[in-house]
Amino acid sequence: MGESRVEKIDVSGAVSSWNPAYLKTAIEKSDPVPEQKNDPDGIRAVVAGTLGRQSKKVSVREVPDGTLTR
Image (cartoon, rainbow, N blue to C red; front, side):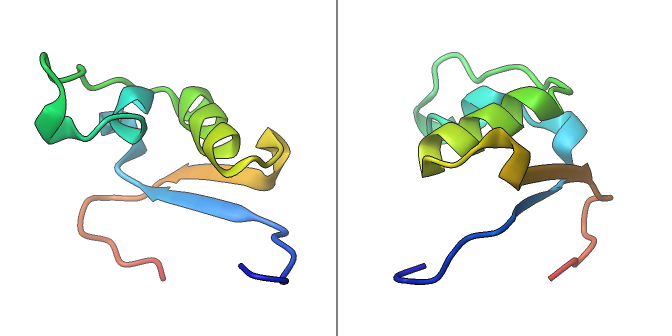
């Protein structure tokens, strides 16, 4: 990012299979592994908080497994 301004953060993937806890702790180090959970707002909050951005700057969208979006 450097001196560039961040206008939007896009989180895309199999969102319905993620748990916001996945983004806080490496799955390999989780004991027990967090259950799958459809929580786009939780994912948005974790990403925004970790990056120090407002939640409204983060979009979370479901795309099928294996779909290349960017």
